[in-house]
Image (tube, rainbow, N blue to C red; front, side):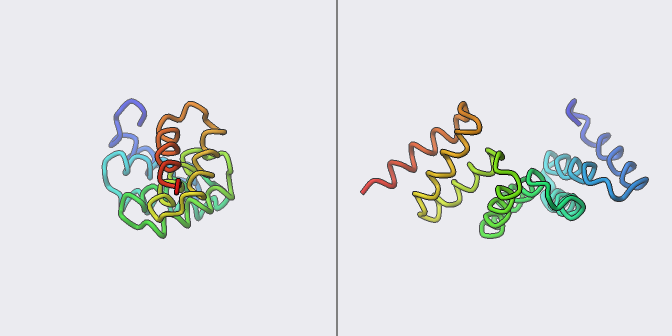
Length: 141
């Protein structure tokens, strides 16, 4: 998968799941692969399966939220980002994406707090820095 042979990786992940349907990691990797190929419906399906198999996996739920957001399902994506952060508060991308949603909803102070959280986790997170500065400018009276 990492070498760009996504279709081959999909076959291997599917084979692994056919041997052991409880492999949450293989379902997660299938979600990644289908997202890489642009099939958001299949990506969502596999992230949901992975999360059902491993409901404490915040990273999986955060990736599911990303697919939902890409599909235009903002409210549902927001709920999943919020929950993924409760499962794993160190998911910098979940903090940043949740902050983006909050900024879009006009919740500037809450967005600022999540951008700051993302930057505490990953200080060199350029997009979070830029979005934080922009959101601070919107929050000024």
